[in-house]
Image (cartoon, rainbow, N blue to C red; front, side):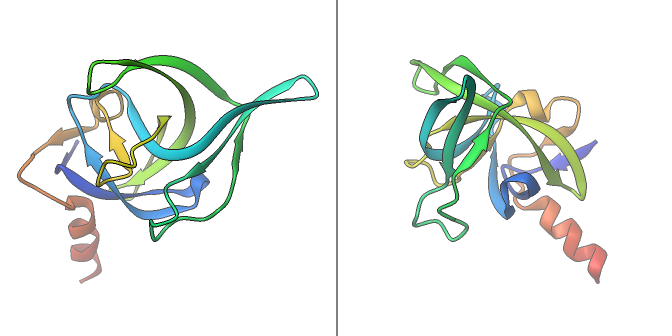
Length: 146
């Protein structure tokens, strides 16, 4: 089991995101990723969702439209206590040089400093959280390369 800090960096290979900031939030059950222009589309009787990740101001932003057929819709309680209907997608995350499956809710995190939030569902039985630490996986990677 790895010790993770409050902020770290991770890769999401299927989403073409490398060394992107992630915030660890033990108060959130679901993990989420910032995106915009989310819409459900029906093409020839097959439903899928389309979305763009991040904001144009983010250094990792691409204007790429992601299309996902394997998704679900779920009512999620926001940190403000209101219920929001969000789409959940499955992908993989690479952190501490290990790849894990993860479910991410597509949400508007434009008011937040960090575009990706890792919740308890992902953290449980994989990580211990030390809120006084930051970028532990990155420091571990640097130490291995020395």
